[in-house]
Image (cartoon, rainbow, N blue to C red; front, side, top):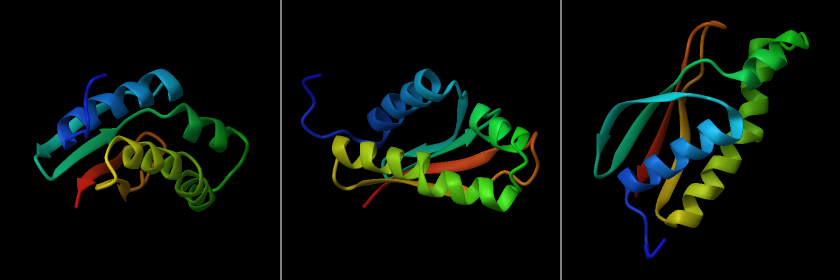
Length: 105
């Protein structure tokens, strides 16, 4: 792509496309500045599938933290080692949303 090191905004755009195309999840930017981008993640087919399998909300959250969130953090770090991808708030209801953040340290 011709970019040596991704900033927060460019990483957010790239990771949002990955979330949309890879997981089928739409997200919305809640806040963005040079050090942080906060993303609201709405309807999630991964959450819905886990719920359909009978998983409890805390088990779904643990699964997300161990799987897709670790993957997204690893991708963020490949874009720029100073970036991290973190879960800020896990959805409290099935029709709720998660808040995730890309942080530059």
